[in-house]
Length: 313
Image (cartoon, rainbow, N blue to C red; front, side, top):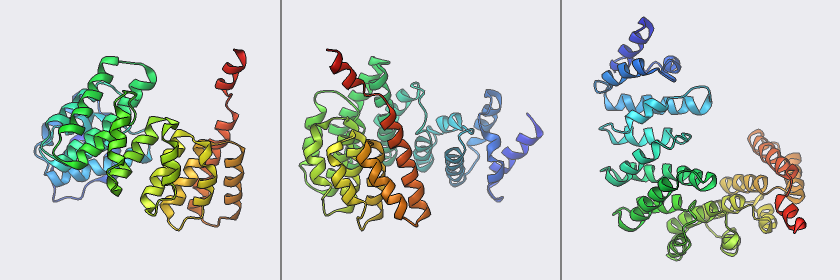
C-alpha cells in the first residue's frame, strides 16, 4: 500500500480530523487490493463520517464524470447505518451494470428501513427501462417487475409503495396502467404526483387527456410533474399549455415547461424557446433555455423514421 493511501485512510478513520475533501478523488476507481484496505477499516469509521464521506463522493462524481466511486458505494449497501445505505443507493443512480439490480432487489425486499427500501425501488427504475429498451435479460426484467409489483401490494409504508409504482412506469406489463389509474384516482396530491411520474415514464400517449388537464392543476408541484410527463412522452399537443406555463408564478413549473419544450422539439417549441431566451436577463434561466434549445434543435434534425416507414408501405 502506498504511503499516500495509508495517510488518507488514517485520516478517514480519525473523526477528530476534518474530512479531507480535496483528497477524495484519490478514492476513485480503486483497484481491488486497495479497495480491500478501505473495506478493512470501514467498520472503524464512525457512521456520521461514513455518511459525510458518501455525500461528498456523490457530489464529486456528479461534478466530474471522470471520477467513479461505484465499488465503494456497492459495498456500503450492506452498512449498518440507514443513512449510509440510502446514500450509497442514491450515489449509484448512473450505474448501468445489471449485476447491481439483484442486490437492489434484495435491499427492496429485506431492508428494515422504509427510506432505504424506497431508494432501492427508485434505483430499480432505470434498470427496468434498460431491460425494456434493449431487450436484454428478459429474466431480470421479469424479476424486477415482480419484485416491484409485490412491493406496491404488500409494503406497509405508503412512500415505498409509491416509489415502486413510479419505477413500474417504465414497464410494458399489461397490468401496470390499471395500477397507475387506481393511484391517480385516489385524488390526493401525493398519489396523483406518483401517478403522473409513472405516466410520463410509460412513453404512452394514452395518458394525454389526463396530463393536459393536470397542466392546469392549482398545485404547482402537480403542474410541474405534468409538464415533465408530457415532455417525456414528447406530446406535441401540449405545446400551447407549456408556452402558457413559461409565465407561471412558480419557478419549478417554469423550469419543467422549458425542459419539456426542449424534449418535444419541433419548430413551434424552438420558436417559443428562442423568444424566451431573447427576453430573459437571468443567467441560470438562459442556461436552461440554451440546453433545451440544443436538444430541441437536435431532435428536429433527426430523420422521422415513422414517416419514412409509412411512406414505404
